[in-house]
Length: 74
Image (cartoon, rainbow, N blue to C red; front, top):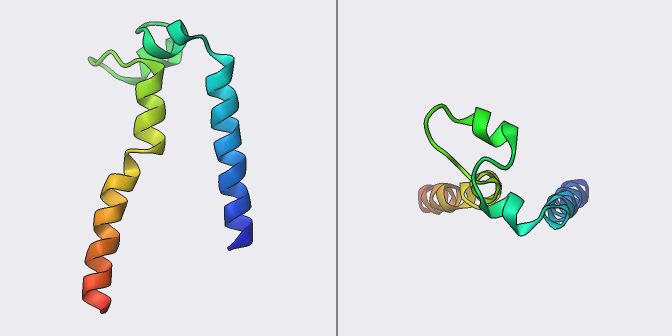
């Protein structure tokens, strides 16, 4: 468990470093990173949206799964 917590802290620090290294324009304006433009076929996403979808958003569905699991177990 301690190892996983350590990895989580490392990942959080890496994400914060990446965000701090970008300007507001790079984070919030579309077409500022080629990989962001190439990642979706039709949608135009800003970099911040990729960060949100891949870090915070999964916990919404994860929370629901935990509640269902707790109901089934308890």
